[in-house]
Image (cartoon, rainbow, N blue to C red; front, side):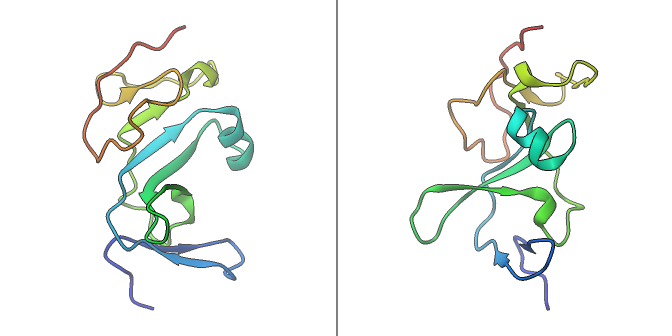
Length: 117
């Protein structure tokens, strides 16, 4: 199958497949406890994307893309839940203690807010 411009992906067993029809809005490294549990890691990754069907934002796990080489987060969110040993370069990424008010950063740096602790 030919890779689509914005990305093809699917579940681990291969029974569910999807195709991104537009460029993703942003890619977050999420440190919330739900993403930690779902990924089995210190953080998960979430691609924010518009749905063609409803026009609403949908969240896709970046690891479900067939090709993840270009999947680079532009922000770290839910840092209040980050593992204490995780270090984030705050000069390189937008950082948020919780969910940012503007969930669609469109690949641009957001106004950085200091993370507590």
